Amino acid sequence: MTGNPVLLDVLVVDDEQPALDELSWLLQRDPRIGTVTTTDNAAEALRVLQVGGVGAVFTDIRMPGLSGLELAKVLSRFRTPPPVVFITAHDEHAVDAFELNAVDYVLKPVREDRLAEAVRRVVESTGTPESRDEDDSIPVELGGVTRFISRSEVQYVEAHGDYARLHTAGGSHLIRSPLTTLEEQWRPAGFVRIHRSLLVSLPHIVEVRMDGGRCSVLVGTRELVVSRRHTRELRDLLVRRARPGGTGR
Image (cartoon, rainbow, N blue to C red; front, side, top):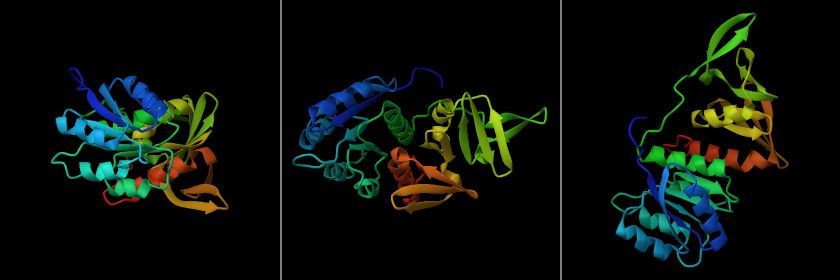
């Protein structure tokens, strides 16, 4: 990127003051965010939005009076609707949210890294480019020879201490990089954590299996178990990719 980046001014809507304060604080820590305006109800949010200057809306869903979904419906009739991110403790509204073209759906309690991903999607949806890791080639050692594989070939990644094992259709390769680093760098390319020691590439998931509350995914010919902690986020990401025009953003 060249020049100074344009900061995004956002509006946060939540009827619970602690949640409102926490979300506002987290957003203010993000270097891509400018002004953070807060309100505890959707009616006041509409008055703020009528004045203009809001680049995106982060809203709770269940609120007294006008709900977050109803607020989004009103915004969809604006000449230039602002991107909407839903922040909620309830996962059952995900499909409704994405039918309203929500940019993201974040579950409470909000993790800072997950919120940063939502901001990235908002920035991307507004057409403002962000710096990317353009190097898609990964050097790997094989029999004393260095060769390069494409990141798009990697189906899943397994943690090995300070190393990570990349699994492709043709085999596996050990690289010196911790899983947490790859998770941060490769998330924009569709890699998501499904377990403490596993990242998977969403485009390589061919099947999701549910059995007695236990979730697993079929990646290539390998079945991988999804931890309970990561099941909801994975399901939301897959719903997002499955909706018409969905890109997994």
